[in-house]
Image (cartoon, rainbow, N blue to C red; front, top):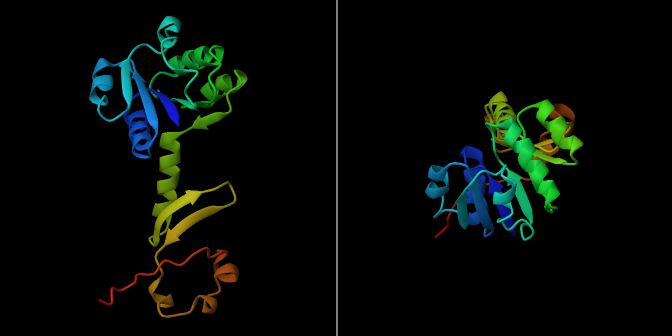
Length: 185
């Protein structure tokens, strides 16, 4: 797939690098010459430009991009202006990083429906992990459900899965068991 990522700060650069690692083409755009230069060998393409300049964004491959991510975090008005320009150019799919409920409301009024909250998502995920000592990783699927990777408490070591009453006692649905396998060679 082809992505355009506007904003190569912490979130945008990490996202872009991971997408390239996964085999995608990523065009990184940032207003900072330093950041565009810094990531030119890690992303497919980079360019330093003002994303809120109508003439400047016309030179970008907007029609070829499968997804455009506005990852700008520090300038809420730039996100809104850029989103408006991208909508005018009929971008296929726009995902916006948002920092406030007002910013999200404005973007929703423009017809955007996909948003990311990197700091909030990371903090929430960490809170669930930190909440229990045995939780190694956690991902909230929706308000009601989450998937967690949990270390087996010592008191259950050696017991069979059907001997532990996960559902009634803990309100947990066991999805999978991960075991360490010893090499017998």
